Image (cartoon, rainbow, N blue to C red; front, side, top):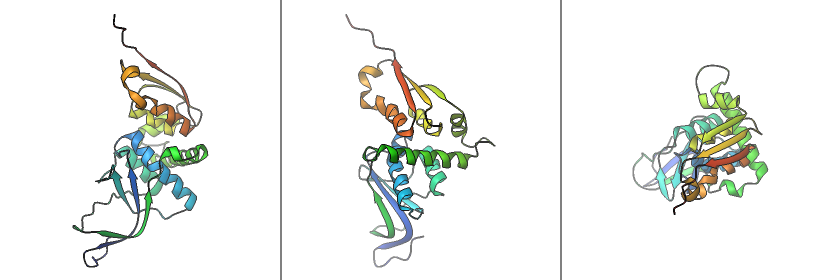
Length: 209
């Protein structure tokens, strides 16, 4: 909990992680890209589990994660508390904090595999894949070898498949021409998590005469 304010500075005693990123924390794929580098850093440094998170997106504070991202981080780190800075205006001083700006692109492939393997293991344990209905995506993907799905954030759930699972992706009409670089997100996800992206299919726009 925050300690007493020293003058106009609010002193926060708990260990924190501060993530500064251009990805948001609501979208499954974006949220994973923003948080996975910290997961790997924490593994390598055996650091204390953060008791609160400070999130920045393009320089602006964010006060919550999407439920998918939050649950995944909770599976790995325990209860997630996003810092709300509710002790009033003025500066805040953190006794312990890690500031994380890393992106997945700066991680080697082996580091990506290790981070995703850990998250896969922790998510399966967290959801108790052999009982109940909690974490249905995790349970379904655990026993899935091949996924054929329209393009969308739900494909990020490939994280929970065993390595070497196969992904086939379908695109709506017009995506080939207008989607931009985002159409490759799940190719990258497959490579980083040890899956095999078997190709993408789309219905092309008719050629104008």
